[in-house]
Amino acid sequence: MSAGMTGVTALTAQTSLQQNREARLLQEAHQLQSEQGSATDAKIAKGAKDFEAMLLSSWLQQAEQSFATIPGAEDDDDAASRDQMMSFGTQALAQAMANSGGIGIAKMIAEAMHRTAAKAEVTATALAEGKIDEKK
Image (cartoon, rainbow, N blue to C red; front, side):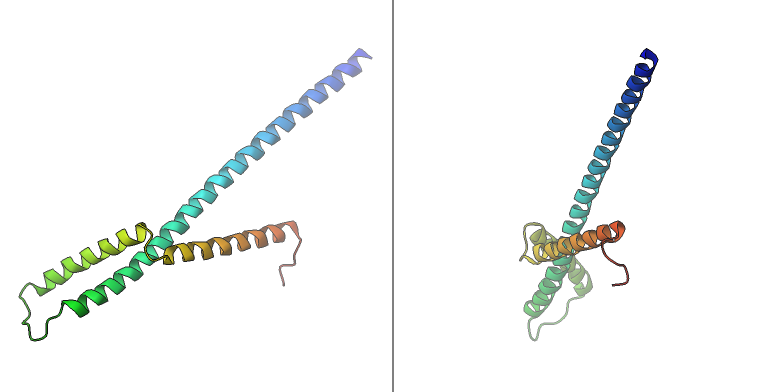
């Protein structure tokens, strides 16, 4: 009888070790998924801010060109280099505006992208679990 008890004890110990390994692996998988999610969040935020900066840059360049021209003024010899420097300045201003909150476009885009990503994740999970038919 003691040999049978030793076998049961050994089996219980092995089962316990296996459960601990599975729990540790599951925890590591959740941690990895969380890290990937935060990386995705950062990418979405950066993309949204970059888009808003490009939009603001375009608007600021148009405004600068419309206000900077003086009717009847002659063009300078340095017009090309001046225009290039003004373009760099406008881009830097637009990026700074977007990074400090801009006009709210980046926030709206990021929220829409998060909703879309969440819907895609729910759909992918449901497909994987067989809860919905892929043909629909």
